[in-house]
Length: 258
Length: 371
Image 1 (cartoon, rainbow over the protein chains, first blue to last red):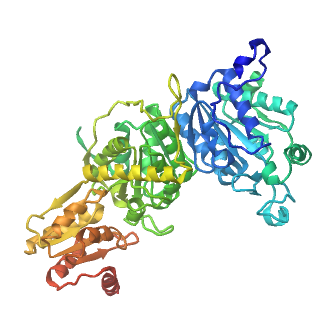
Image 2 (spheres, rainbow over the protein chains, first blue to last red; image 1 turned 90 degrees about the vertical axis):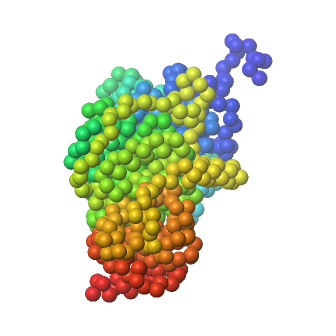
Image 3 (cartoon, rainbow over the protein chains, first blue to last red; image 1 turned 180 degrees about the horizontal axis):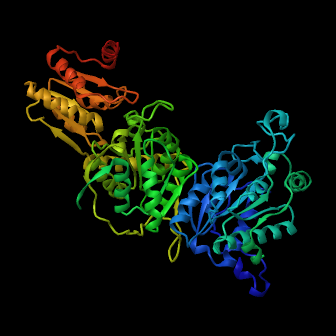
């Protein structure tokens, strides 16, 4: 394909940090966008060969197939602990985890809190789509009040299930956090802002400025039960008010990168 | 190196350092905490990694991550903490990477107590995590053996890309006795052909325990079993005492084996032809040795500090040829030599039957004994 296009006309191609493995994600899912942003950042920073990824359990369990770098596959929620083990013995490598909301904010709550608290010099990409995708649509710790899921069929009743967890706000309180930001993947402008945040999160690690996490508000058309286009609108109208976008922690050293 | 008066836990930690340990991740729990404390001081001063994790769950997953890079890494804990590590252990075994674990066992189940126990034999030897896997399991009976087995564990773990677990009774961790530490080995970071340490100038690598195709997982299970057969062939270790002419064979590992040896020696003085087999590797288990012994012995007596766990492995080896009797002290109680001596005398003078579960008769005797 690429040979048919004159180099001066080439505006879009597969990032070098990607393998040619086709992704398994559902049509309209924003995992693909998030993956691409990470790959572009790894290319721009020219760090792909010294990057080690930690894949989670959830829809992105096969993330290791798509990035052209060393990868390990963690147990559910344990990616920050595994990343800690890698980073502590290989401090000159770039280590990142890619985790969903069930993985990071439910079963892996202890691991993410303490990795951030220790100021573990790793980068975390946190996909918040307010639902368990791989197990087909159960309530997540980030599901919105009233949100219907297969395990809250009448809608999330806060009297029974409590309230959603705002991870960026929580982690930003920890001294070990160098950079914590929330972005959204629902339109081109926000996608560009998300990429910039991901770049800062990796720069934070490369410069040894502590724990960095970018929370990405994402869609799950399959389990939300609406079309991809409706999902983008739903994200904008319902998720952003509950999960305001912005930088939640920018340590002084990180502010200089920005 | 000179012999020193060493506490078991400290000796285990220092032995691991001298074997080239590059990273330690652990969590405090009695009676193994001195291991963590020794590493807390020594690892940073040597420029090596030490993290007190937020839980044993996190610790084992830090171990998992570090092990993927190919360095020598370990964690240690005690029974309840080991239970928390079973998830990670299953992943480590499924990923086929070398890891060393030490369990300084205490009384259970549940919170139990902090006294010496052998209640985790089955957890270590016959699984504990999910799925089919076989770690190498070593059982020291002295501080010196704890040192030697810790060093050996790293070699075995690397040779077979497996987890190697040292199960030390709480007493081994807590007691002091003269022992010799090995010389300091330089840290040699090997560039294993499987390690995920950054794909610089080579093809990328993936380490995972996932085989989404059942047929591939089956092949992986069979491959791991083939390796296990190799371990069974090459790595069985045990010690024999007075077995040359023994009519009666006592089998015990760790502290129970050590206490039993005193009883065996006293029984010998009384003219009873009794010997002791003390498994060093409880996994792989010395089935063949017991198989041979069962062809000439009149009866076996299994002594454990639990409700009878290794007992089943002895029965498997003896194949019902002769009676296998049991004497155990569970819950953190250490037997005295005279208790085991009474059992040896009973076995040597009673007309015993082969039964499928000798624990029932043992239970009746225990109830009587504890009155």
